[in-house]
Image (cartoon, one colour):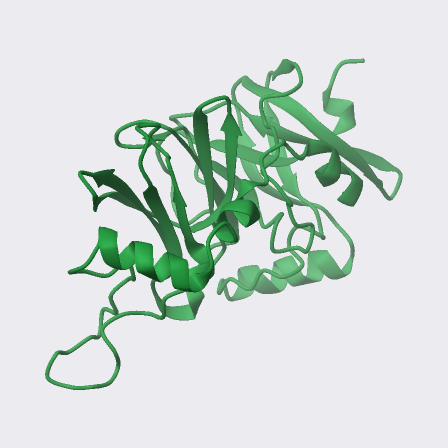
Length: 277
């Protein structure tokens, strides 16, 4: 799996470069000039102006202030990713520079994962980690636009939280597309290693399966579904293929997903025997 992730890395990796392009003092000076009367931080829902505690905003993470020309109009825009809720929940804000002031364009759930650039166009990737009643990690992809255009989100069972970290966002567009008449996508024991959703008896069933080293079915497609192969691994004499599905507006409700949703792609494992030789 580690080899798989490395092979999927794109030439993104601009996150660290942009984070360190300015010192913290320089970032705060630019921020004071572009946004003198407000804050980029996320406000606490329990803030009460009549009491000193808790403070109004969650802490500012200067390492997550990214100043760059996102919309290609020759001035500095801003993307900020920071703490926004209980249990370390994260959100990301997109600000556009207009006439020397930055204005909030949009904010989305999840932390900034990476930034990629192709010629003069940027792509921003965010990731929302599993929490509470969900095992699902969600990736989102934002293309340069006004406002930034959201492509279909991508869901997986906790591939990042499992410890197989992406150094850069994988290129999910590579490879050929195959159509399966029906499919069940599974999560591997590694994928579920660090998840901790609160499902009572369902959690016990999951833990028992993990102790036995079994892959767990998490979503069923009863009609034809298009998939792309991303990699493979072998466990207990069975070869498993990691796939990503096409975007589906009629995505079935899955065992580990909080609810059915709008158009989304899903990553999971399928036994190799499901594919034609």
